[in-house]
Length: 231
Image 1 (cartoon, helix red, strand yellow):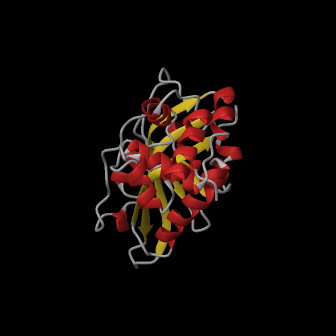
Image 2: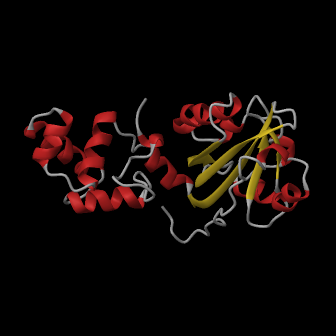
């Protein structure tokens, strides 16, 4: 990932449960929506883009005329659409009122946009669902050429578990026991991963996985981002 790209403003606002009912249309909402550096958008019940502020459109490299009314999922990389669809659907059905996860979007120039996403359900005063407020932060971009390389880094579910175990410092024996595999099977997959990532050893393998955002830094033990796991 290109670390020279500017990163977005960190989100520090989390709407409380009692406030989200009256968020839309309020002065607080309008102030937030117009705040520079904060990428915000509103989605309707079909998860289509209803409205977005300037920072959101700039980061996603979009214009209102070709974005409003378009499915939000269409702006995302195909590998994350199913996962994000499920997360947002839980807001629409009332199963949850807040989602915090990571996304990968595809800009019109072919570059990938990585970022953290916070989404909250907005309901009417009557308690009925109205819309979903989306906030994106910690954004960073990789160019089209590098994006093509990273798209080729999809892992099988088993390889993802192997990588997570290696990143957590588990030995071959412990990995074999945890995954019900032979030691030879574990070593074979670790070697294949090192070859795939052009890593000389396990330490370099984990380092490259972190640098390419396959592994997130927000949790322990490490977890491979769903976008990089084959479905």
